[in-house]
Amino acid sequence: MKGLSLMADRAFHLDPGAFDAAIVDLDGTMVDTVGDFVAALNLMLADLPVPGGETRRVDAATVGSMVGKGSEHLIRSVLNHLQAQDSGMSPPVNSAENCDRAYAGYQGHYDRINGLHSAVYPGVPEGLRVLQRAGLKLACVTNKPAAFARALIELKGLDGFFTEVFGGDSFERKKPDPLPLLKTCEALGTRPDRTLVIGDSSNDAQAARAAGCPVVLVTYGYNHGEPVRAVDADGFIDSLAQLQFAMAAVAGAASA
Image (cartoon, rainbow, N blue to C red):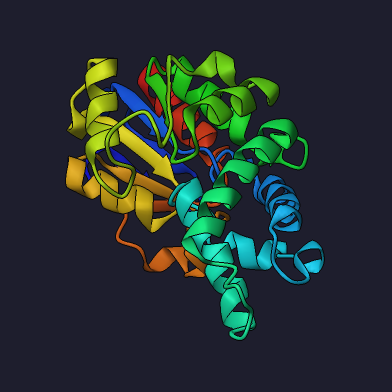
């Protein structure tokens, strides 16, 4: 992809003249939120009127493979997982009634614990500062509900980087549909081919490809439990801080 190159020193070299903006994912890209998900989901499960509901739990490894497609998908996946573990459970934990009850309970629990069991990944503020100093407009686009996303970004001190924050309920469709990225480009006043997408999963890559945006994936995210390097993307980085070295190298060359 023009404007992108991974060098031998592992720095990801971006040509600042090739981009006007960057769209950055949240869960698994900027913030490790699995702890929040696990806490809210286990509180949700304890509320369900099923035999032994108060003792049913999910762990980080299980939840990490389910994150990325929005709250509704996460809750259905957890309930289906528990039902598969105990196929004789009656009434079924994944019944339509329990799904509705679980979603309402999850929203309430998540609102109270949002950000309490999560942490910003190393290198994220440094990488965002580099993009900001290069003059790129920055937006966060996530499948997490927008209110939760904005609250989390503010709590973690990242709100000063973004001119726009959109969630899974901001548009008619979620990633991997390209609509959220296209709508964000419109809001930023940028062309998709000049808007870099940074994410952690096939959701981000598929949405970017369909929208016509270049895409770079971090290697430490969730990606539904699958190897991220198998995803069709323009490059992979181990930390957003790698962008710092790239921009510094480009800036140094320009001033020489």
